[in-house]
Amino acid sequence: MSENTDGVAGDAGGGPAADPAQQAPATAGPGAATGPPPGPAAAVAPAQPAAPSAAGSVTGPPAAGPAAGVAPAGWDPKAWRVYQLRQQRAESGAWSIAPLAWAEAARPGQAGPVPTAVLVCAAVSGIASALFLGDGLGPGLLLAVVPAVAAAYAAARAARRTARPWTLVWAVGCIALLAVPALRDAGWPSTLALLAAVMLGALALHGSRTWPGVLLSPVGFVDAAVLGIRWAWSGLRSRGSGVDRSRWLPVAKAALVAVVLLVLFGALFASADAAFADLLSGLTPDVSVGDSPVRFLLFLLGAFLALAAARAAAAPSRWDRIRVAPGKPRSRVEWALPLAVLNLLFAGFNAVQLAVLFGGYDKVLESTGLTYAEYARQGFWQLLWATLLTLAVIALALRWAPRGGAGDRGFVRVVLGTLCALTLVVVASALRRMDLYVDAYGLTRLRVSVAAMELWLGLVIVLIMAAGVFGASRLPRAVAGSAAVAVLAFGLLSPDGMVAERNVARFQQDGKIDLAYFQSLSADAVPALDRLPEPRRSCALRGINNELSRRGRVPWYAMSLGEYRARQILRERPVKASYEVCSSLGAFDSRTIG
Image (cartoon, rainbow, N blue to C red; front, side, top):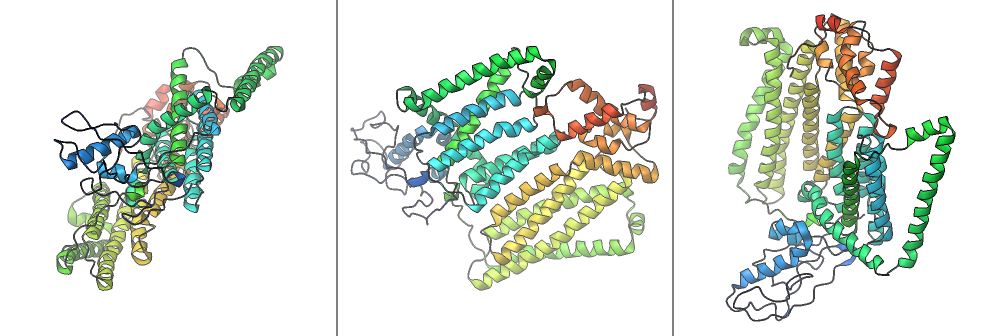
């Protein structure tokens, strides 16, 4: 799937759409009204819609015809042109609610006939979703997504779109992120991985490379879902009316016969041999009549998502055609004075941090009257917000930066580069404070999450500095890629396992441990907690053991690797400590830990 190849503004290849009031009047598109709206208007003959460009690219609004240039009697010409554009967009589903200029710039083109392979893959994706996702996420998620990927590939190949290096990078990253739920039992890193996978999948399908494209590409799934259903329905109608029936009907008959034979002989063999029956029950999904509504909804969800991916691959939305006009450039003094003051403030703060580093924290605590926890914890949150606000300041400063020539560009790089370098020191100070706090009070989910976020923000600042030296054309994709890599690393490192590992090591050093906090961790923490001595081991694992017992038997396609290992450990070394013993050790104390 190729990336966008937009032309310059106003060219035939499709630059950003101009304001409707400034465009030449557009003719009615497919599905538009063939006459004027009610009112004192003369009949206007509809013009033929412009043919879509190759590979589903978006052209500009249709060229104005002789009749389209005249508004009906009683109509304002601008209102008439806007009405015609909205009528043309009426067939595009979700695009009717988008801003007019954005919609005309980024609206996907017409897709060709839906390939049979796309319909088959969408059906397989729906069936896999219904069978494998009803019991939870795990390896079954990959089994449900693979047919959707195949549908997108078939649609892109039929549309003659070629894969570019960035497209392959996004696709591989998307699959890798979808593997996180198969590896980790914790829900929060899996949720982040799914969101990041949606972003990378949208970038792979739409080929976006600008900031509007990177930020808005996931929104394209909404429009692609609406258009994908219509696209598939038109394909099914054409096949049902006799078009290509000789090709798909024998395949459908053969598939039906194969299913009947599998069910018949599988049932016979299962009733004849208990070992085969046990193997078959472990491999096949357990589907009951009671969960049929949920399975049906999962089937629809899987099929619709596959069709949305295929429709986007066949004719993607061209988000890169949305142009954000730069702000009015300011003079050097007006632009640089606030930033220079901010740089001085950052420099003063960093000087204090260096003095604290060499002077020792005890002296600082004595002079400020703060406790160890207050100094480390409160300082981290303030510095995290300072990092976020600095990124916002840099974005706004670039919008209104002076652009008079090479001298102004160099001046902007020096000022903002200094701010970025000073911000990196703030990031390092924030991470150091969090490290001190963790040493004193242990690691928690919240602490590891915000520390990971601060690390990623520091990486973003480094990418901004690199963009100032090597150019900013790749910065949007670099930031998106860094976010995906950070989420993937976060999931693969198992944050719950890290929390348990760090707290067990702290217990081995000073004998301090919070057994109550472990009750809410996932099965990923079991291998580390298993190293604790009894009865603390059993008390730490009690909550996780109860949760796994409550789940009961989980099929292989819904069980993560972390849960599988935890069940093995608890099966070999069960929880032994009684409730009274664990209660005396504080395993059930209610507390809030930040």
